[in-house]
Amino acid sequence: QLYMHLIADTRFYVEQIRLCLVSNNHADGKMTSEAKEMFRNNAFPDIRIEGDPSHATMRQPESKMELMQGFMDIRSAMEQMAEEIAVATHHGKTRHPGFGYFSAQDWFQFADMHLRHHVRQKRRIVEGSR
Image (tube, rainbow, N blue to C red; front, top):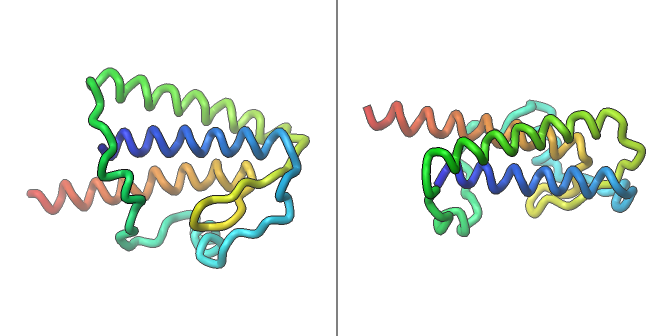
């Protein structure tokens, strides 16, 4: 479920990046103070964060290959987004459900912070089961 969550959420972030890169909509939108703090620290707070309840019903992968392909796809998409962000002519923002408005660069950074947060979470789970 964790890996499926990471793949699904990163696909959502990629779509948000794409939307930001094709318009200047909401360019003046602001992120919340909590988001500003996270971005300043380049990390989620090291606390347990209550996730979206829909994550509990996330389907299991059909196979290890499905997971591997999903991660390869999001890696490729993020590499493409990095290239597009570097030459962006539009600087729109889209709204994160809990943290206000993010630019394409913010979404890109948020994707990285989100992944690292779950790597820490997984490490805690594994260490706790020993």
